[in-house]
Length: 244
Length: 114
Image (cartoon, rainbow over all chains, first blue to last red; front, side, top):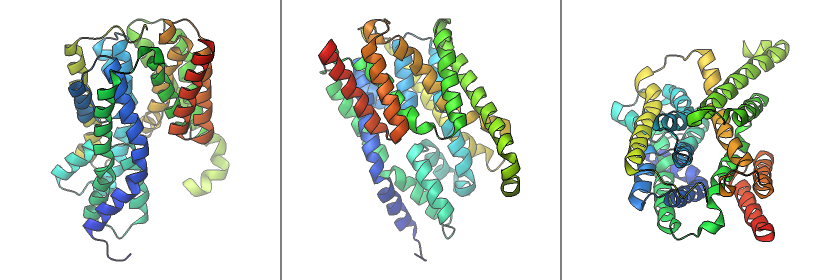
């Protein structure tokens, strides 16, 4: 394709993101159901998804609020889970930084996993695209997924209250988190971070106010960063020529 | 059902929603809106890469060892379902398949043993 219009970039974003409604749908539904179980009404669950728009942070906050964690710790923990969007924002900046402020402000709200992952692949491939096509594509990747996520939350919240407690739904959240961890273990350093955090989290669970989560999270991050440095040093003789 | 019968008050809920909304937006806007193309220090990026993969396991490990549905008593059913979910997620990298396996395992074992 030699002539890319802004419109076709938007529609390409819509098409490329379509498979992700299979992820956003069930997760939105689950959030709605668990929010209802936790005592949120439909409007509160919807406001949560609309205002925060970050699945894993929402699940984290929901879990911690049910454990009567102090609000400050809830906020710190949920935002820590969401720190990756700051990295997304940083790596999108070279591609979208020239757009008008209002567009960047909208793009910031829509910076989520699938929009970032799809866009980075596409932006690197398409050197014929300008900022306008890139921004259109980025919005396209959310055109279907974002409304789907909101609608699924509302649906979940509507049915959630009628699901019997005997189903053991309060263990579905740990299962959802465990399922999310699998694909994150991309490198040995990620594995080190994951297992260090687990090992520290168990004894640290004795700390008051769920502070153990923050202690264990920091320990995992430091272990991951150190492992990355160490592995890079070990690989340095071979990598020297390509990465310097 | 230890985990769900105690609800939090509405004020707390709205503080959390508002705080997360502002905080998440600030994280997303920080770079694309304000920092521009300035590079981040390497050591910071290196730590940020591991936030999610450290915080989520740290959250989930105590929930698996001391599950809420048994009021914190270690439980073979919950541990098995958790291990299966993690195993499937790691091997297949498929979040939905892993969740479905874990949920089926949990409900299957609850039906058989519970």
